[in-house]
Image (cartoon, rainbow, N blue to C red):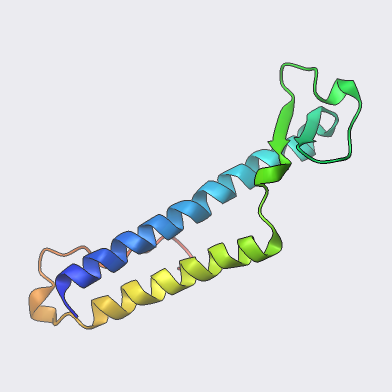
Amino acid sequence: MSIEAYLDARDAFAQAKARVDEYARELSIISDALRNKPNKIIVSNVSLGLPMEASMSRDSLSIDGSGWKTAEQFQQMLSDFHDAKSKMQNAWSTIPESRRAGLQQPITFGRGY
């Protein structure tokens, strides 16, 4: 495998990680709202409605139900993350030590990566 293949795999992993990070950010916002102001959250584009007070406040949170990930989509996002991570690590392992000078090592992020 070439250095270019490694760099492509590293970029693909960074993109997969960015998708996970964005979803985590969205979940964090929702989690915070559920904990601190559950009376001011609505889910739009679903068939069940809520009292007006849930949506009429300036600080109400509206979640687009049509954009919410299904369990299958959530699992696919995680699968893509793991696949991209593996490809990046495998591509790195094929580059001889003598050719690694100047290359950034595989992306690592805190615990568990």
